[in-house]
Image 1 (cartoon, one colour):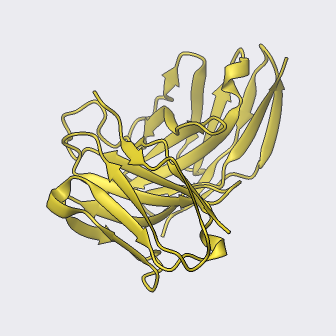
Image 2 (tube, rainbow over the protein chains, first blue to last red):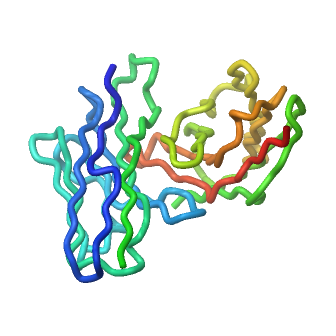
Length: 118
Length: 115
């Protein structure tokens, strides 16, 4: 089974520029999460999708961050314009809703995108 | 919202010895799930072990086991026979049955294994 894919793996931009991250979840996983992980801290949920609907985006800085999940599969997270404090690893994860599966309740993480804002 | 607390920012253990990482959580729910995730340096986060709150028996996965104390809201991870490859950040996580599959993470414990 292919894992969660993310791209790019690394991105360096200057402040006030724009950047976009892409995530492809595990096939069949209805729930997709975007997390921000600042160095030395735990993941902070930015947005959670179930299929193509938003379940929770309460911690997403909506003045500069946006995310979409078209057709309930791939997702894109955008930052426009970026600030210095946005430097972090952006993690995408997915999970299954299928109670009959052995991995129900487990989140599978992608490798992350390390963003550096100069 | 639920909160997860890991009070040990850093821990170290001698190779082949045993170490216990602490985690406490705050919730008013009765049905939930608890997890320990491992994140090696610059590598992907992976699941170590999972515990369903309705199960009284502590989960075990090879050298990894948990001590789940539901009344105390405590969920510690024990690593036996520590290996160099166990060095990583360890995150405790909570998932409720009632919040749409949302996970709450602790701040992590950095584990160093000393040869």
